[in-house]
Length: 129
Image (cartoon, rainbow, N blue to C red; front, top):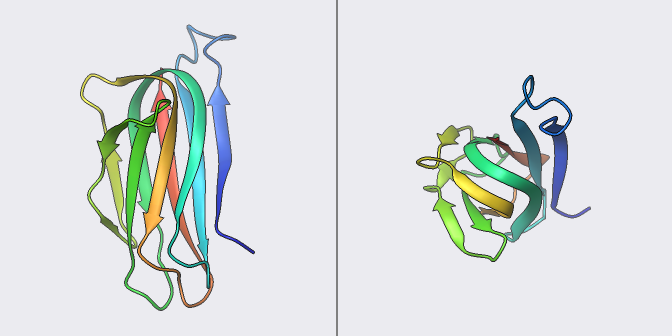
């Protein structure tokens, strides 16, 4: 199998319940597999609104001391938030100052290496209104 980026959760009720649920949320899981190599993965988030928060959870990677870079690009490929290199087993929350108005955006994950066994999961949760 190959490394993968998969939308694992989607909550969007802004149009049907704007007064009750004005927030959207998308969770994307990036999986680096044994032997998957060092390659950048990306996932396009097709949402129109304001991006308020990105939570990045980097799981454990077997057999390596790995790091991961997570970057965010707007729909034109312009990078708008770059996170420091994150170590395995860490979590960080990024909150763009004042929010970032988006008409779709791209999450890019670049892992330093592949685990020697099992999978290495990086979960990125994005929320906005």
